[in-house]
Image 1 (cartoon, one colour):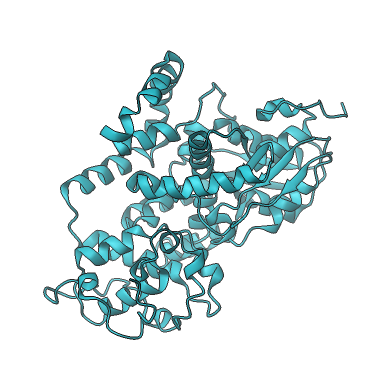
Image 2: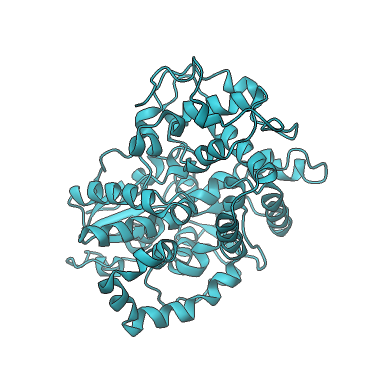
Length: 460
């Protein structure tokens, strides 16, 4: 039974663990007491928190985790149970949007996770899985090496055979999750290092190609470049940019995230760009906080602040500049999904809808319970495959209930997570990034380019 008064009285002892050992947090950026004090335990966050919605456990709600953090500041040890509750947080930031007191839970959980990674010893299986993930996912070249064997696996018939057998989820749930998330791969050439604006130049933009985005969704990057050029932007894509560090910082690997951030700043600050454009929501939220990530670095603090000021999500920049490229009709019904790190972390909701609504013939439909995460959350679905599938199935049902023919979102993790869940539900819906829809309209392409069967648009 859930104790609704938790946060004002004593928590159950099995949550904090036995009182022994050193305090949970050291002096290197522990969760800040003044932010914790902002929480009045009102409960507005509960209905938007995915783990509370799943389990109804106070310790798996934002205010419950805040109580644990406060206990850690008071000298309680970092117990295995407390770490489990911190780990269960998706980092979706829906609670930040819902909180009437403005509690910066995002800062609290980020600082807490950095403490956990430095001060807590994980079990052998968890350590091995996390080591494998972070040896692969933040490295675009290593991910691209997987493309050839993955395409062979998808085209050989082995994937369908394994799916019919049902063996993989029972024998290796983590591997089964990775296998189900992998998108169908097509050969797409990499964008050139510089693409000139079409017509009058309005801005010079650097562009992040990303890790998962460049390896598994290169068509999204290509569409992004074409849209930016059509809207009067010179697009710069210097080589060697690497990972932005989002996965690392969201999982407490602060030093690693700082290394990635320094490298990215060094690569792009020489380009003379006006803006730095991101087409992946999770990356964008971290890039906009480089000034915080590197605030204690005397060599990079000012450079990080200058870089952060130029970061824009693709939809954000296009809305700022205003459209100049003609939109040709695209007769499709679209369900738009707010990626958590775009809507909650960056507060960007109006701009994508505005851009989509500006396409003639496109009908926009809203999804029920948009504040609830789809369960992707970076690598959360790999670390927690069963609850992630529950959240994905919930999201898929809401998406399919719209009756839309196309789901549009702005994050590669969401695209993979919802696609896998729709397949489990036995449903059918095409999926696309916002950039791909805009690109199809600007180029006057048929809806079939987005995986749809529909009459061709009028225009050229």
